Image 1 (cartoon, helix red, strand yellow):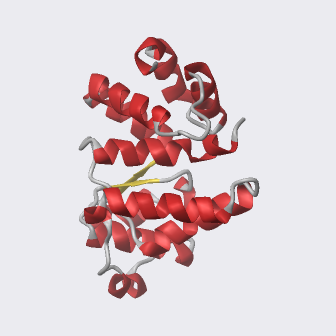
Image 2 (cartoon, helix red, strand yellow):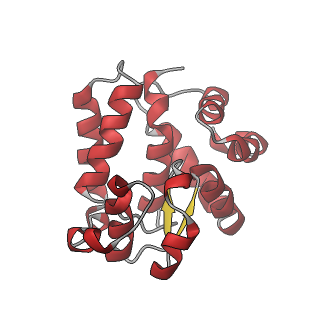
Image 3 (tube, rainbow, N blue to C red):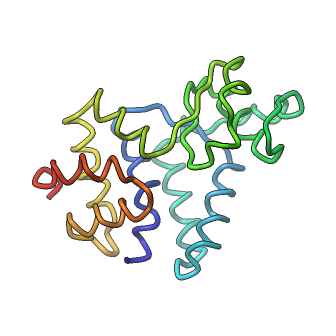
Length: 181
């Protein structure tokens, strides 16, 4: 699997936000966290490339930055106190959904009072497909083509997403593979 495929989910979600299918929200802390996790999990990707990706994301979606969240952190309760900054960003950014693989650290009982839910990237994208079927497939096609360094073939792209945990969404994409080319 090419190194850039590790960034595929991030690229897809950013493309969906750029295309107006979702309103993304994040902070510099959230960017630092995904960069740190990808650097550890995919050491073949140069750190400078991850930083450049972050900079491009911030450039194309400047309104997604949430800066007034830190004041909320001390009053929040989550199983892992280090995740409170994510909930604080959702609250301050008026987001209704946190998209993460780390579901166990965002229990519904702790999110509900803030009007926030938590969903995996796989379930989020499947749900988004139910709402914006054609627009989402167009957005995913653009995201695949934005992986310029490797420009994976459609089947390689879908296989990489499946390998990254997008099992249900990969089934959807396999059915729409011709539209992703």
